[in-house]
Length: 317
Image (cartoon, rainbow, N blue to C red):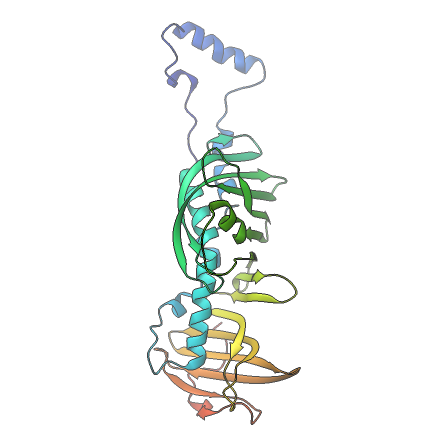
């Protein structure tokens, strides 16, 4: 919500400046081609929209409502673990942007909004496998407008107000969406945190598709092999890479899995890689997450239940 610029006469100038002089100052500024304007405040929402919004990257709400039990479908349980890790890594950029939006910039020009050093307490991942801890840090930020719908964001953190500051978050956005890069290991270094393992870089893009809604692609780690990969589309689709125990030998194999969960129930389909050979597998479950079927077309994929009993077999769109 845009703020209203106070008129110069409301700034409680020293009493030595008379009302007449204040009027002359206002008239003089206007006469010099520099009228007082509230335009920077009227444009405020556009700059704030360049900051990451929680609703753009939050995992599907239906998945978050599932309470795992002993009867929970194994692939749904694996999906919930990945959802938790994804949420842990994203919570830092989401929360830091939310707090910056709430605090508001304290320096404004026509093309820039600046947050001078401000102390914020935000969740930080405890290690490569996820988990969270709250940490207080000093944050400064800039949002710069480069074109009609083009914005760049830079977010820096430091252990103290005096710095030194290190850039840990950057983005570029346009009318179609935004691309972000977060140096999570930089946060650990700046704050000298003792964590398990070593955090890496988190990169993700957010696109608003007129047909399916938001589309998020996130990568954690280093190319070409990422420790984490997630893809979200619309309100109910969640896909990720990981290791899956779906074969008769009970080994875990690398692969990818896409999941849909709605009020009707859920369905998952994916592939594992066994020495370069890709095997398809799938599963379905009831609305409360109870497993109904799991299997595949290859005999090496463990099979249980009846696929004809699945509540549905495709997207809810």
